Amino acid sequence: METTKIIRNALKIAFPLVLGGLILWWMYRDFDWEGLWAALEGGMDWTWMWLSMPFGVLAQVLRALRWRQSLEPLGERPRLFSCMNAVFLSYASSLVVPRVGEVLRCGVLKRYDGTVFTKALGTVVTERMVDSLVMLLLSALTVLLQVRVFAVFFQETGMSFDALAGRFSAAGYWVTAACVVVLLAFLWFLAKRLEWFSHTRSLLQNVADGVLSLRSVRHIPLYVFYSLGIWVAYFLHFYLTFYSFPYTENLDVMSALIAFVVGSFAVLVPTPNGAGPWHFAVKTILVLYGVSESDGVMFVLIVHTLQTLLVILLGLYATVALACTRRRVPPVAEMVPAV
Image 1 (spheres, rainbow, N blue to C red):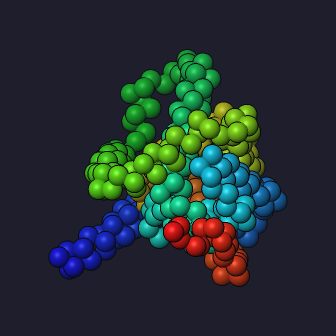
Image 2 (image 1 turned 45 degrees about the vertical axis):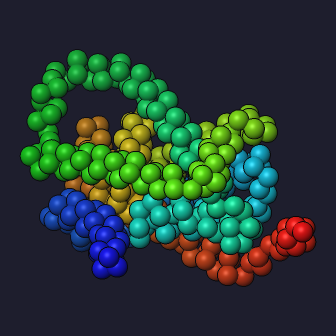
């Protein structure tokens, strides 16, 4: 039984890494690595790249602020410092095992601030629901705004949908299909794992309280501001990098928005930080907007690598900061059992 469990856990770690690695290998099997060094040394404007980085940090800080706000109705008041470091660490840990960060950050609050783990987990579920709603609304808005653009594009170029589809290679279709299958399998796995909560009534109640905590959140406008601000920061973190490269600096904000939306859905495929599916999705959108295949591949490699390094640095910072953090001592009334 132990051996089976070890093998299962090993597969959970290995499968996302192998999947992402295979997609990356396919995309970069003929890549000009000398051109990469030339781009890093003088072929790109680093000013815009550096300007984009604070927005990546801001998105995570806003997420910590929103999380802390959603915990208040449950009687949990963790320190903002703890919430921020928990979020930083969660993103970094998900680079090793996708999605593990959601559980890890709840554990951090329990360890350092005494927050009830299952209540924190419930608020994380609520977060994901809210984020999904924002992404769906953003996607619908993007499609509506881009319908006219696409119509003009097809009219002026005389390009049909068949011709557009013809720009995909057979391997491209296989990669897309594989990503969809993996995503569906991952959603099925999550659904099966939810059965675990039914084993303990109090556990289920705590999770339910966390999910429903949104009903009692004070200052709903502030919660909405945080929720929208997270995605605005993520978008600016991505969009400003367009100005770092000569082949994307002239693309308009709408082309960046649709690449951002498609890339955000691509990271749902469980690979470390979306490595592989994100590269493929964003590169494909850039190609459809006139960027050459080689330039599109160069763009996604540099941008994703640098943004991943930022996540790693924040995770390292959080690890050191938490190691130097004193755990919050519970009140005396909670320490002494009732007679």
